Length: 226
Image 1 (cartoon, rainbow, N blue to C red):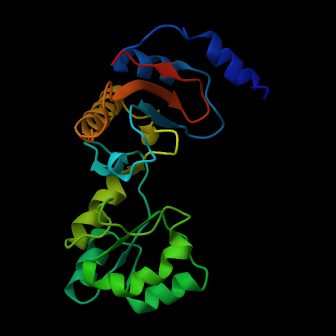
Image 2 (cartoon, rainbow, N blue to C red; image 1 turned 135 degrees about the vertical axis):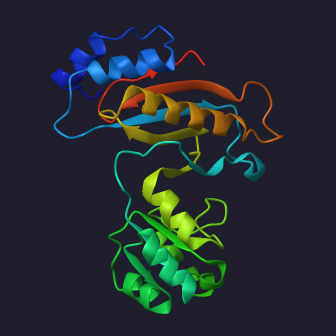
C-alpha cells in the first residue's frame, strides 16, 4: 500500500471523510489545506451510473466553463485561408494544413489542444496514431472539429474542457486553479456538474450521478452532497 506524504496526511486529518460537503464548503477547505510545491488545480471526479461497455452510454464531449481555468492552453488549428487567419488572430500558437500535419508526424506535439475545420480532416486523419493516445486528436464529439475554428480556439484557450469517461464509468476534469477566487471556482464546478447531469444517456438506468468528489491535484478528496 502506497505511503502518503506528511503534507497529505496533515491535509487528511483536517477533513471528515464521512461528511457530505456543499460545493462552497469543499472549496473553502481545499483552499486552506497545506499546499504542494506547485500551483495545484481543482479537480472534479464523478462516479456515473453507466455501463461503459455500451457505446450509447459513453459520456464524452466538451463544455465551456463560465470562468478561466487559471491557465491558458496552447491550442493549434488545422485550417486554411480566412479560417486560418481568424484562428491565428484568436490565439492559436500554430496554424496550418498539410504542413502542420507533417510537422507533428516529425515529432512535434508541444501543444495542449488541436482544433480543425471539417475540410482539414482529410489531412488530420493521418495523425490518429500520434494524437489519439495523447487525447489530442480532433473530434466532432469533443467540439474540436468545428466549422468556426476561431471560436473553438478562443474557447479551448480559456475555459472549454474536454471530458470522457474511463472504463470504470468514472469521469475526471480540471475546473480551475485552487488559487482562483472561491466564487469563480464554485461557478465552474456547478456548470460542469449541471452539464454532465444534462448529458445522461437514455440507456443509463437508476441513479446517474452516484458520487462526486472535489480535490486539489495532490490532496485528499471531499465528497459532495449533490
